[in-house]
Amino acid sequence: INDIKGGPDEGLDRLGQTLVVKGWVRTTRVQSTVTFIEVNDGSCVSNMQCVMSPDAEGYDEVKSGLITTGASVCVQGIIVPSQGSKQKVEMNVRKIDMVGKSDPSYPIQKKRASREFLRIQAHLRPRTNTFGAIARVRNALAYATHKFFQENGFVWISSPIITASDCEGAGEQFCATTLIPSSHEATDSRVDAIPQTKEGLIDWTQDFFGKRASLTVSGQLNAETYATALTDVYTFGPTFRAENSNTSRHLAEFWMIEPELAFADLNDDMACATAYLQYVVKYILENCKEDMDFFNTWIEKGIINRLSDVVEKDFLQLTYTDAIKLLLKANKKFEFPVKWGCDLQSEHERYITEQAFGGRPLIIRDYPKEIKAFYMRQNDDEKTVAAMDLLVPRVGELIGGSQREERLEYLEARLDDLKLDKESYWWYLDLRRYGSVPHAGFGLGFERLVQFATGIDNIRDAIPFPRTPGSAEF
Ligand code: 4AD
Ligand code: MG
Image 1: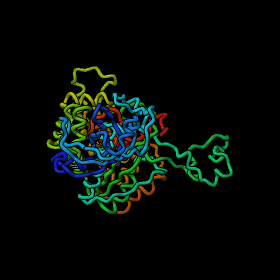
Image 2: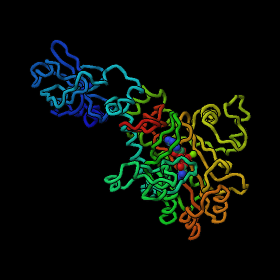
Image 3: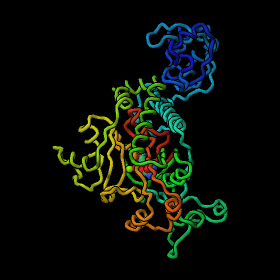
Image 4: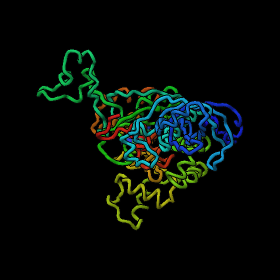
């Protein structure tokens, strides 16, 4: 359908052609002399309006009420100018084939269903306009991501999903409890196969063939090894966080894009994050026009202007220290009191992005080292690290990144301070022993990017099958 109607002439260039459309029936409207069937094939928001008179082949099935919402059909007909005002062309049906009937219990009827309802219909929600458009824009963002990095000489690296290292050191790893060799399963019960401690308790930390392993929280440490060999690399893959938080911006399983740049400092990192974000936003504005118009009308009024602004203007930058000053000056009572050294909560981020700086993306840099991960490079003031977070309105933190500590003695001292086991980071420390270079990178949560780019307010609607506490049915 997009092939026919998606061009600049909206299908007028196809007048007179006999074509076939295969898709799912959105609605059927039977009138005395003609029947209108709206068919959607998922290629775009637009349906093909199929107009059928009683002499068309297959009309019997229409007459007997078999062509109902949700049914799959194959329609052949001629493209003609449309009488209606909603579209330039429609299809004058010659023949309709019923491919798969739809039971009257089909849950996605014409009236608008709530997002909550659609989450429990996750297998059918891609057939709605909203979720079809989100899926296409998500796809375009992924494509544009690879395109951006490939055009700029980055090499894509697959980082492992099962790992023994905890990149963020925040204790948010899922233990790989079900990663039991299948040979075990054949003989033992599942529970017996899980390693146990002396006391007979399940040893959640020794479960990967007898070794400690978890699902990765970030591919960064692995990306650093390749950046210190190939210079500029990026990862794009699933990551996991065992944070039991029920918010509109946290998932237990999300996709992360993590570029890592060698011979680069925090300024290079921020420049890369800015160029990347502007590139992918511009890409969808130019290549997903119909879907973006749909979001602009139905999901977030004004999103196109908001995103055009992102592409055209530089992002503001301020230091953490200045952000704290600004929050202290704000004539506002926050739930979490503000003082230098505190972690910025979403209420603080919201105030800064939405009120103080009028809804534009901005970057906060140089955070206190106590609230940031062990690998971030210490600044000369010895109190802050070369970290940056890119914040956007509503979504909050879209990107978190930093320059990495490339000095062996500083990194070892930091691991000691945090009582992290130096032994297990031996390979990471080796990167600082053999040809260490200044390097920097960031992580962008892909679903938060989808939220930002579509205006959809809950992260559960930005990924086909969201994984949140207690939901893994589909
Ligand atoms: O700030 P985070 O925790 O940073 C890292 O993992 C670094 N190792 C990245 C790097 O420098 N290579 O996570 C990065 C981004 C966040 O800014 C956020 O967009 C997203 O990942 N994110 C989540 N998205 C959805 N659900 C969650 N639970 C998320 N946790 C982080
Ligand atoms: Mg972060």
